[in-house]
Structure formats: C-alpha cells, structure tokens
Length: 364
Image (tube, rainbow, N blue to C red; front, side, top):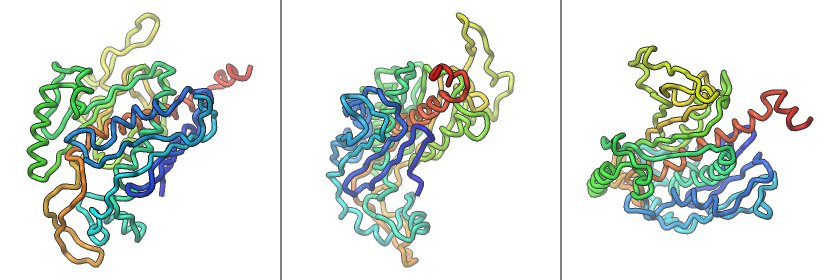
C-alpha cells in the first residue's frame, strides 16, 4: 500500500480513522530549520472537525506531538515523527458497514483489492488520513517561506454558487467557515448547505491554491513535470475528481494567440504579460504565480436511504449514521495547500543538485 510521497523531502503517513492515532514521518528535511509544534498546529486547526456547523461534529483537538527530529527548536536533519491521537471515535456508528458497501466510498474497491478492510469510519481511506499530509505540509511551507514562497488558498465554488472576482476579499477567507473570499457568496452558500443538511444531502465544491514567489526552474521536462507531480499529489486526496492549472479545461476552446503568455523585461527580470499557463511551461515553473483548482465531489456519506450490496452479494438498502461534513472543500483547502507545498519543497531541494555550479557553491 503506497503511503510514501516525495524523493528528497519524503513523507510517510500512517494510521486509521478509529485507531489509536494518525501521523506522519518526514524524512529529508534539512537541519537547522526553526520548527515547533505551534507551527504545525496552526495548519492543523484549519482542517480539524467540529469547527463550524458545516463540519463533522466529531470533537477532536487534533493536537500535534513532535516525537523526533527537532532539538532546541531546530530540525536535526533526522526523521521528524509527528503524532495526533484519536480520542472521539464512535466505532459503533459504523457497525452495519462491516458487511455493506457505502455508495461513493472506497469500501467495495478496498475489499476487492485486499479481501479485508477496517470498516470503522473508513479506516485508512478516511479523510482523517490527511492529518499527516497537513502536518508535513506545514514543515514544507516553513521551509519554502525562507525563500519568499507564499500560499493563498480558498474555496471559490460550492454547488452552483461561485465567488465574484469583483468582490474578492482575501481577509474574508478567515471570517467565514466556508473559506470563501466573497461574503455574499459565502452567505448564499451557507443557506444552500443548510437546506441540503435538512434534506440529508451534500454538495460538491472547488478549491483554489495560488502560490507566489516561486522561482523559475522547478520541475523536470519529461515525467517529473511540475504539473504532473501536482496532479499526482492533489489527485491522491480523497474526493478530488478534477484538477486545473492556469486556464485548465478552458484552453480547449481558446486560440493560440489568446492562450500564449507574452514575455517582457522589467528591472532586469523576465515577466509575463498574462498567466494563462498558471505558472508552468514545459513542466517547469516560469516564475509567475502558480494557480491550481481542485474539484471535490459531494461528501458521499449522506443521511438518505441508499441502495447497495453486502459482502454476500445481496441487494440491500443502507442508512448511514455517524458525523459527516455536508461539503468537503472548506476543510480540504489546507490539504490541497499542503500537498502543493510538499511537491514544491521536494523540487526545491532537487534543484540544489541539478547543476555542477550549484555543487561548487557548497563545496568550493
């Protein structure tokens, strides 16, 4: 089961939704990076449950513990082991799932592959697995911040309600529980979700992640393309069904004269007149803002009777119990950001050895 991601900045997540805890081991982080539990906790607080009416009411503090790899407030260059203990898991809510497959979930496919599964809250396939991603992403972001690389992540669409570019307000992202930078859109989306919750239903959503300060030159020209690696990283997040970089699918209806980004010089630096490419050309960062959008399907755990089958091949109906988000995007935004940060941190370290002149700077 592949639970390891990265080449140099490498992470290995572990744990199940209703097990003793979840966490991650981060290997390859350079020594000397200032790091404390508060740095990681700030990121985890953005995804923890029970924070609003639109998140699962599972009551978890999601308090991070650093078990190794940090001494005196600095990383030591050795593996960093991080742990979050599970405390409020109600496994009895999932008892009927031991023999039945939830529509829209990984239950059936997991069972077919392994012949056995942990049915408590989805086990390894639960969204709770993303705690390890966010914890390691916080370390990656701390490293990237040393080079002036910054992230802005938000929800721009819930159902058919989309933010207005004219009303964009970055400060509003942290003022509403839906992480939308448009108060009017956020209010409309809130009303929409309340109606869906009364109907026992859920909604899809879209997350935007924008990265500024990236140098040109991150990524490889063939299989290790920046956009290809971002695709692998973001698509590995449960419930992501689509990814766009730059203009994304809209390029299929554009002309080359419209889609091409012209270059110009400014203060001795190469700049772009537009950014249809979303910051990536030929699989390599071009120095402009990286822009990606991830589409999340509606939460599959809905409080309606659904048709399914059991392990014995019988047609049955199911009523799902438990505590579930009516929409995934608001809590998953920080997960998209974290996976993006992991890709960029890894490529930043790889670039340190892509030229002989880089090695000479270190060893001469």
